[in-house]
Image 1: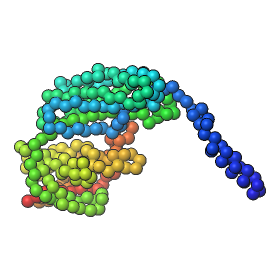
Image 2: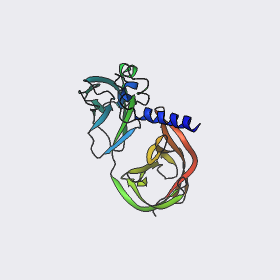
Image 3: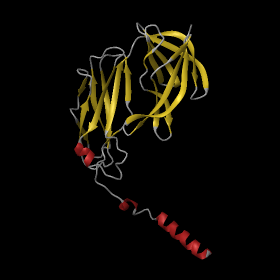
Image 4: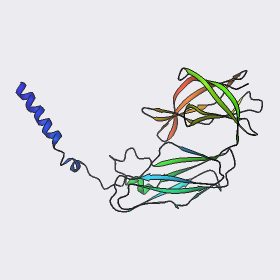
Length: 261
């Protein structure tokens, strides 16, 4: 019996060491075109005009290849596709970049567009290697407000079971608040209150910085608020990208900010 086990083990070792023919196990000539980013990307700028680069990738680098895509947006007069729906890969190149210009932006307004690969590029994707391809991507851009610092408040996170001193900013001439680097460095939390400050006008889904092990970046989203003195409580949702759209991962927890006096 021991000899049999050893013989099987030796056979497995020989099989694992035979790497010369690994490439022959599965080969494909498919390009497997994919946008680099699946999750929506947001760019904030002080300028009213900006050029936005978008990267596409492929798995087969042999020869040149021309991919096609369409741009869709509800924001008329803002975006111009400088690449005119065409992305060209040079021989030996596995990634290429197209550009979209944004102009005529008004301060504090979020503008978005979605790029989608052509049916031809999607249909020629390899069914094995191309399962995780991103056939579309959404990019948002905003010409930022002028912000004034109100002071330091206190943020309390029920999700992470901790609290901390938190700088608070407000956009000049508005009731829009920003909590810079709130839960993670580089990720701000932003929301808009009514004129009297007692109700929530807007809390858009926004990246909060934490990346889930399975679903990637988590987004915070709130539909309502409660106010007690200077403390604002948000019944929060934790959203993730699932099948190309935001879906609820967590709910039933409250995040709060106590504004400076």
